[in-house]
Image 1: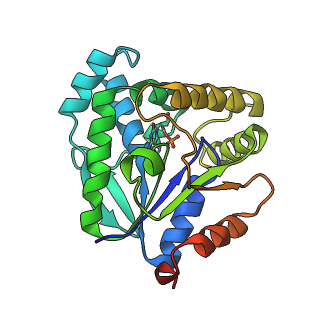
Image 2 (image 1 turned 180 degrees about the horizontal axis):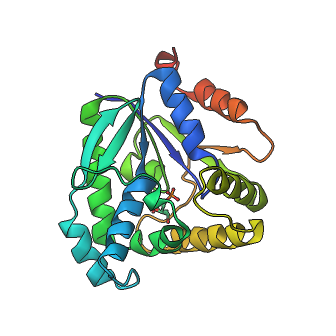
Length: 224
Ligand code: DC
C-alpha cells in the first residue's frame, strides 16, 4: 500500500514548497492537486465557457483528458501531449479556478485522478480537501496556514519572480481572500481544518522549520 502525506490549507500558505521538499527528503512523489483544477479552468476559458455555469463546466471537464507522468520527483500533467506550465498560473486562472472547483463533476474527476496516483508510489499531496475528502484515512494529515498578509506577500513575490504578473500586494491579497471565501463556503468538499489534523501556522516560521515540523509528526517508520 502506498503511503500518503496530505497537506491542506488556503492559498499562499506555503503548501507547494513544503510538500516538494518533504517529498524530496522522503522519496515521495509531490502531487499538486490545485494544478488539476487550474488545467480544467484553463481549458474552460480557452473554450470560451462561462466558468460560473456549472453545467457547461461539467461538460468540459468530462471531455478533458489529463495524462499523468511521474517525473523528477513529482507527478507531471500533460494535455494533448503538452505540459501547461505557467499558463495555468495567471491572474485570470486565479480568479476563475474557485468557480470551476465548486462543480461536483469536476471534483469527482480530480478526486479519482488523485486516488489513482497511488499506483505510482508514495505521495505527498497538497490541496484543499486532501485531508477531508481525498485521503481522509491517511495517518499523516496537515493543515498549513499563515496570515493573509504573509500569504499575499509570498504570492506576489512568486508571481513577480516568475514574470507571470506584477500586481500590488493589495490586489494579490484581495484575489487570495476572494478565492479562500469561495473555497471554504462551497457545497462539496470545502476547505476546512479536519479533526485530528496537525495545524501549522507558518507566518513566523522559516520553510525549513515547517518542513521539520511535518517530518517530526510523521509515523516513526516513515521517517528516513
Ligand atoms: O492551490 P491552487 O491555488 O493551485 O488551487 C487552485 C484552485 O483549486 C483554488 O480555487 C482551490 C481549488 N482546489 C480545490 O478546490 N481542491 C484542491 N484539492 C486543490 C485546489
